[in-house]
Length: 363
Ligand SMILES: O=P(O)(O)OC[C@H]1O[C@](O)(CO)[C@@H](O)[C@@H]1O
Image 1 (cartoon, rainbow, N blue to C red):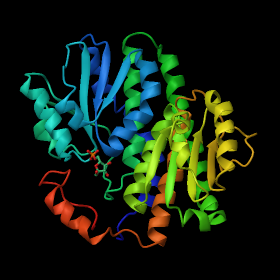
Image 2 (image 1 turned 90 degrees about the vertical axis):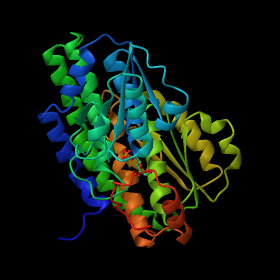
Image 3 (image 1 turned 120 degrees about the vertical axis):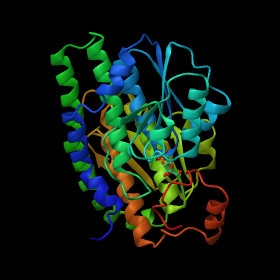
Image 4 (image 1 turned 180 degrees about the vertical axis):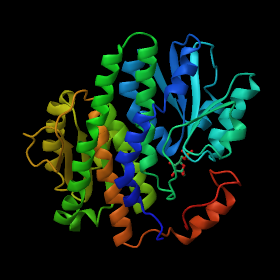
């Protein structure tokens, strides 16, 4: 059987989400939370797992009714591990082999505390390193440039927030069902973006296939999407791709704009509409390579449009396949899967994964 590609995994993502919902995958983690009294949550994760936490964070803060802090494992170990009893901390690694995430679990244990691990692979190094292991239900993903693992981690974190709200009596069973229905309503929007992506690629192939420097901007959940889009462009296409909070773009980064720049604007949700329009209009004065992803049907020259969905804290998740498809297809078409020859030396000298990890990509 041919090896699955990123595109295969992007296509099978809705099925994974349905499975997570049907199995109430986050219930064990919610039960762990409900066992004590916590006033904040800290998610320790890197790379795409960190980006998934960033995408999930706005809705999760609201459903938990508490602050949610997202911390990189290195920063956690070096600077931010006070671990007060009121903080519910867990470490996420899709592979379960990231050395920094494993170190974070070790550190938690060294304080005599219970190390909670969330992973996509319950047979990974996380099994030994965590005192309690939670499988988030992504299943096998045999491509290192993860796609379904990101979307399904977001949904897992949302389900966690919803189950906590139910357990604390802040949501009734009916209200829980309504929240779940909103997550399910993302699937047709996700599919619509998946259908639009190749059309955009075809229509604007010359500019997309010659991108050199890119900004990806957005606020709230849209910002998390920008972070993950930038990671995918960076690791697959090997171009500088900089994620920026919508308005931060105006505070320095815009000064390096030139007609050669490509700017992606993620603006799903009513709150960002007016500002996004102003930013797009100004950006178009400098470069023609502007791509707008929005639920605002009246947005002139929008590239990708999705049907509006309440809550807009959830809705931007449907944009992820746009970036995943672009990253995959352009890397494939441009024969860019291999990295600069010296990168293999780097990887041999210093890897972010443990010795037990089986590399999924040839550099
Ligand atoms: O979630 P994990 O498996 O810890 O991996 C995090 C990140 O590490 C990488 O595999 C390599 O940096 C990324 O592709 C990935 O997003």
